[in-house]
Amino acid sequence: MPLAPEPAIGEEPSPLLRLPVMYAVALALRDAGVEAAAIAVRLGIDQASVASVLAIGDLKLAGLAGPSATTTDPSCSLASSNEPDAPHQVHHQPSRQQETPP
Image (cartoon, rainbow, N blue to C red; front, side, top):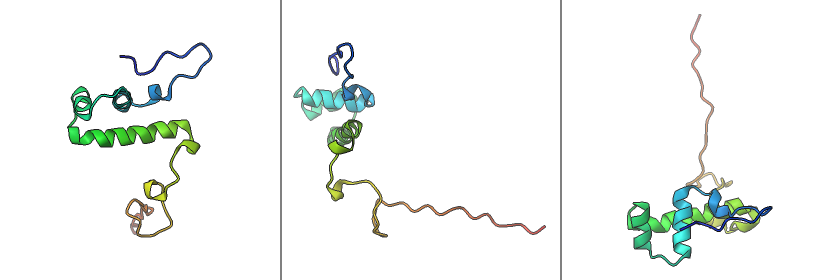
């Protein structure tokens, strides 16, 4: 089963073809109406992981389509925020090397 039809000459290929294989296959199977249990078997993953794989695949696909296709809901954003206690924000401190006396 092909993931997407071959593009005509001069057309851009489907963004689905630019995704990592696992996400592309999961999304293609879902779009074809395949149930989560069968997707899990096909991908060799636990059925409980299928929803996450599909969600990540959808986000990756939206990212390929450009910023206008992504959600603007701040609760879904993985971008850093100005809130110092944001759980997803990572602060990197420059490493300080101790000077050794001569």
